[in-house]
Image (cartoon, rainbow, N blue to C red):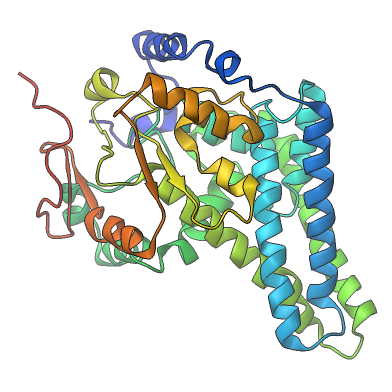
Length: 373
């Protein structure tokens, strides 16, 4: 089991672990060539400019002198386009959106301003921890389930918080409380503090830009609707859009790696034996494909197979991956019924029985990993 002390050095695992990652990369080598996915400067910049423009236009309408109902609608739409900007920034952090590393770095910084994310902190948590150590609890930082033993030993407030997180309203609060400030805005976590000087420039950049964005929203709202109090401008132009973005992010990250078929691990040796990274991600088909960028982002096995593939190439790559991993991936079309089943089934993960359980420790799935001899 990974101790609390070990979590301070989460990303510094042994060479055998890194070797298994290299072998996994070798198994999927050539996937991008097979699917024909290529990074394109023209296509990447087009996506960036398109969604930046849609973000700006919906922001203007969210604070303009319109009926409040329309402002709220445009504020919610603004939150959706913030999420699309995040997808673009995420691709840039993988060096995937456009061919140039420098362009990717600066496009990522600009795309991450509305969400208040430091590029270097995101790359630490996402590229170094999540992608290299997918579903290894104590290392992979997002939506890691508690074990029944951890849950029993937790304080009453912490147990209540876990019940909220793992319930239907969890995505409303999870990203705020568990991820954003400590992992993405400030270098507060143990691995970030260990290299805080490295993260400081991006942290300062995003804090200044983020404060500047909020200030700009207040000035814009006052100029377009001077009769409105600033608190209402703040609510319409920042609180509502940011809440929508946070919900979409938290909801999507949850679905990416939480499913009754997908195990989590606390023991490093077991993880190295059974982790495939591709098998631990889901392909969630979106029933109404109104946002192709979002649909592409939910083809998550292909992304884990080759993070350097741009989001606009993932669906083609997923088709190739399916022919190579027949029967080895979790794929489904999102419905409210399926979402309710996942929420009902995936509360805690038992490390000994290697199955999902409810909050009382009763198994809700069969054993997902064969017992060790």
